[in-house]
Image (cartoon, rainbow, N blue to C red):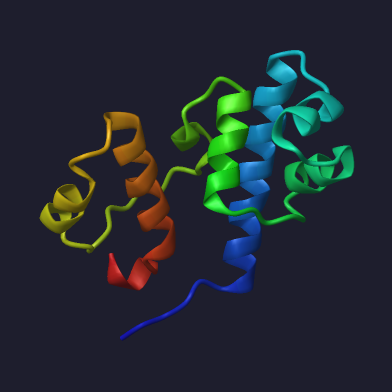
Length: 118
């Protein structure tokens, strides 16, 4: 049975990501305009991202993390439950990645797999 994340779940996910971006940016004393310049966004796009109103592609999340001197996984919300996705298969598919990248993929997959399938 395939179920999908609710709109509210997706909205919460992007709100948490935006909050983490805002916290990391502010913690480095960087302005929204400064981050925007580094990643090729407008200041208003950064503001929308931080507010959870703008959804971004994964490659942009990596670019933002690099601009903030973070691993991308630091911007992804934690999920307490483990996924029912076969751990051995996931490990095999990500074995060529370094540990932070593997953790990023694990967190991303755990967000995409509905709780009923975990």
